[in-house]
Length: 402
Image (cartoon, rainbow, N blue to C red; front, top):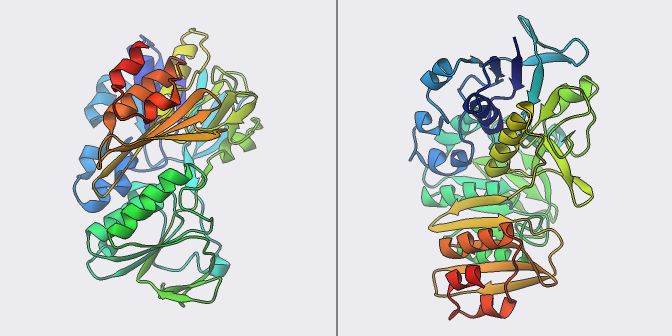
């Protein structure tokens, strides 16, 4: 009997398993996860869950009954110790599991600061798993001092939670501006002002020398010798794709686990999807770190296991919640050379990324209409006249008809 084994029980792994069943796959499906919790959503961890506004069960992607009814074998709290692509087996601590197809959805791991500069002290946290957030939740008490290393979306979301709960928050960013790697100067400025208006301190072009403390954090020292007191520290300096198992199995890596346009790796009958997987786009192997990509890529792999032979055409979307601002992003802004600002009123604003005359992406703050229209335009390959975008009198729906 056919047996699909999926290593990694996150958003991508759960999506692949469910899609296989919905397509009529009648063989065995085994979904292996290193964490003890069933597959769950990660984005709310640094938002509603950290704020205490969401219970753990609401994070779960599916009820436990779903997996039983769909005849998907869940092996939780289980680490894979070896993959043999010749024998087509996956080895765990207590068994060897044969497969006819293997899907690697192993996700990613937050980068940690070196122990030599205090990265291993008690009170230093990263935000990636349910266990990570459970470990730090009791730290979020009014009046305490939180220092966040890294001004990306994870760090800024944690900063917003801290300020909402009455903490003194400082964000340290080594680059000249927050969000520099992922967003335009205009978007960076918007969020810098937003956080400052809510009482957070944003320090840009500021390097970390070390985290201070003997066993537990007491503060941080900056490269300019300033010292800031801290009751705890959150590190948000990016993630690394989990490719250890693939590498030791001899599977090719390139910015993560390298796949072709249909999700195949260099090993026969082995596929990859989600944060751990790169795929070809415009002459490069790229990875997209988002829920939407994890779902879409994993479902495509499931379709191709069933014989669809479809190439992956990404339609990226992202979001972030900070204070009363909902940021929605459509498209990929890589290679942009012009930003067009649309500000129909004082509450909503959007930034439209162009390369020449081509619309690449949209950042929409509290403007769901701009996001939805921008997303549809990008997916259909249409690029409106930038002057029409900038004109607040332009009806968004009219752009779809042009």
